[in-house]
Length: 107
Image (cartoon, rainbow, N blue to C red):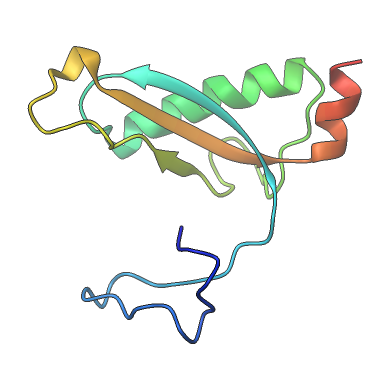
C-alpha cells in the first residue's frame, strides 16, 4: 500500500526487481488471524481453506475462487518486532469477497 499522493507512474521504484507495483481496485476482504512464526505456504493454504469453508457456510461469495486454495490469497501480519515470541506474533490470511454477499449474509 502506498500513499494516495502517488500514481503507478510516480510511485518510488522498488529496489528489488522481484517487487512489482500494481493498482488494486477497491474491494472487500475477509480475514482470519493466527499466531506463530511467519507461515509456510502450506500453513497459509490450511488457514485459507478454513476461512473459505466459514465464508461458504455463511453464504459469502469468494471472488477469484477456482477451487479451494486456487484464487488470490493476501497475507498480512508481519508487523511484529523481530524480538516478539512466535506465540505472540499475529499473522493474517485474507481473500477478496463480494461485498454484496457480505451485506446480505449479515441481515
